[in-house]
Image (cartoon, helix red, strand yellow):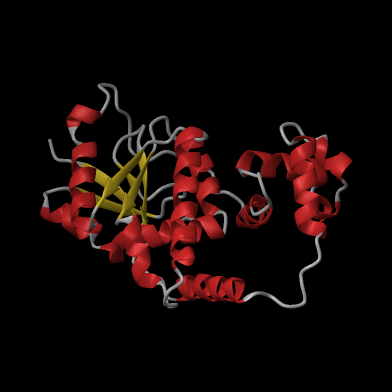
Length: 254
């Protein structure tokens, strides 16, 4: 029986679909609202390069994507392509290893949250070649249930405007996608959340006084007149990463 995998249309430039075809896989392109590859009715895969991972952390997309994965599939997976040491080659400032360490720490903290909070398994590959081989194996009969249904299911596309609001709130300390959703439900807009008092924030289920105080401290502490050199460098690198990404992979905004 031929193996069939559904791939998101925006994955065409990643070379993975072509490698799947060379392995004899029938690749069906669709615009997927969740994930990048569907290998069974239960399993969807979100593929990220190391650079995708870092960028999706900074703008908050990763946690929204994880929520979508577990809401619509019983056995979702995340494939991380590449090695964390690859981040070293993207640094433009000599003798400032703290910048590299910060990025690696951010990546690890995110992977821990994905594994522990969302309970999504994370698989690692060295390159697109290994990713393609892994997808073929995942789509094989040995990892599919006997009563496996159709690969595609009807998923209502999320409101991108709502997602942007959630991204804003997940940038606050200690706020994941679940708490961001609760904050929007209670305060109706990010502006109202940012203007809420400690007491009002603390009344949101699961947030508590300590987290509310930390949020208000972040929002209310004045910025020093002189931004130190390290902060300037970090901001410049973050902007460079965002503008000069490899462009081979998309991050679902839905």
